Length: 273
Image 1 (cartoon, helix red, strand yellow):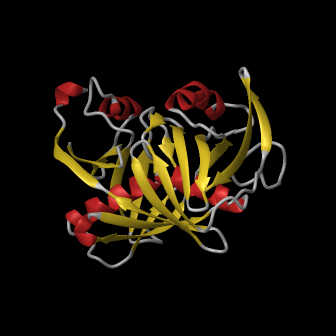
Image 2 (cartoon, helix red, strand yellow):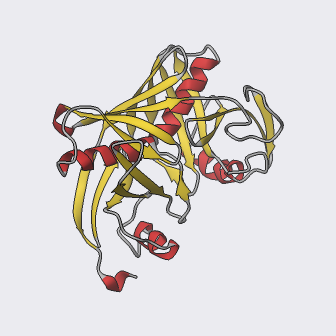
């Protein structure tokens, strides 16, 4: 079983060509003490009836994710390096919808058109009926938070705060991820608006835990800040792993652009499993 490992601002994924993987194998590969360690697995490319390629994305707990912005950027870099694509845009099918990707600057940057961000509670989903989930309040443990919710093909809860910290994300992220109001669980971003063009987030990723960076989280947070009138349509998102650029259309179609770094390639030994 061969693999290719990359990171996007510290958010690391292992790319594995099409093969059958069970939950135990996924968990073992992603474990940092017993496997190679990763924030997720990108399985593909598969044939697609609607796009140029199809991608399956798995979280470290073995669950399958609908979409990942950084995962898609890493997968795009892999396709480019392996000669599946050139410099022209191409499309990738995910469980969270089709996206358009393009590799630039000799592989140094990758752009992904993530699709339309929606705040509709019935689409995210968030319990409580159809409405835009904006500036609602939740009691989590000993704290009350003001939050918004969005989907970029996968669910997000954006918590508004003045001082997002890793400790805050680690303590309350898992409680919010599994809160009953989110029937499919949710990714969580603790967001601070710095100015009209910059926000800062700390991330708790569904099925993965505390994460240094996330493309879909960046898109959801930037779109939320813009929806609330706090930021412009072009936003730089600052995360522990680095910065990513988000561009939003008037209809809230989000495009992300940022770097991808290749780490290594190799093969897994059977003994690992």
